[in-house]
Length: 112
Length: 115
Image (cartoon, rainbow over all chains, first blue to last red; front, side, top):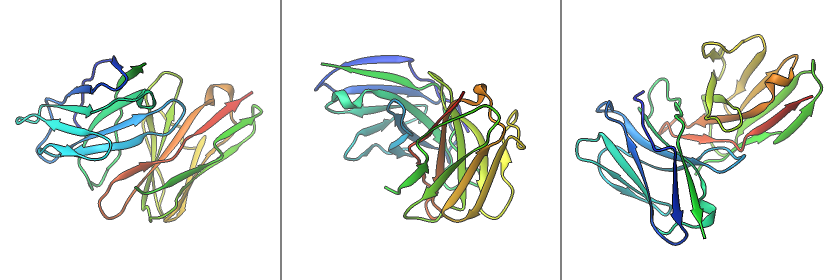
């Protein structure tokens, strides 16, 4: 699976949009971009994933650049409960391996 | 989304004893489950891949005789930490892969403290 690069930490004001970047310049054509987050002392929580089109669900939006070498996770109205470590991962869905390789992620701190 | 449950969520044991952690997929069948370990302020590290009905595949550096994995059914995988030592104290997390879409869902984690 391709490696990803994320900023170590970010701050965001409560109620504002949180934009978390991720670089995945070596992504292969059949690899999806996945985002998970981990709140302290809990298991990772799935947020969203996409291949090349932008995606939106009830939690977040995912913007993938046209060349697919980077993406941005957007939390439109961050709350204090969104404070967590956010992981950007690329993997082949349904592949024979299928495991997720976690990097260090971005520690997002939402402040009142 | 699909639900994966781990038990126990917290366990404290004495050095030298064995501890079993269960991972269950509650509303789907998982032919493949993964076990991760996470030390404080570190990222998740994959320990092993557990396939139903066959032997687990361990990552480099993970002792298979110390971390016994059993995946006897499509909804249950267990991790047994044998002869636990204080350095085995960690947060152990499992994930299960759906057979259809291949999506991965995680358990809540189990915090092991070895005294």
